[in-house]
Length: 82
Image 1 (cartoon, rainbow, N blue to C red):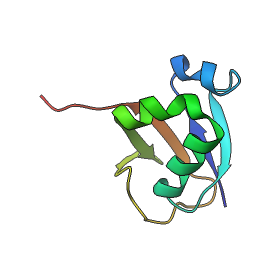
Image 2 (tube, rainbow, N blue to C red):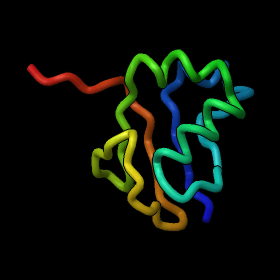
Image 3 (cartoon, one colour):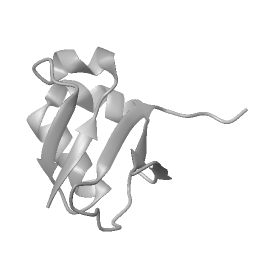
């Protein structure tokens, strides 16, 4: 099942200038593994903390919840409370 992953602009340099990727992933955990493998430049950003929104809802980066086919996933700088 393919999902659409949207990146913030400064990450495009690690993804061949693409800000939207179509990736086959069953859940967020698998998606993170694929991103780190296929785009190693993203790993430091992922390791430092990224927020994931799946179809407009914040999601746990370690979630094993199934991703719906065609889901829109936004990678965002870590959201912090205040």
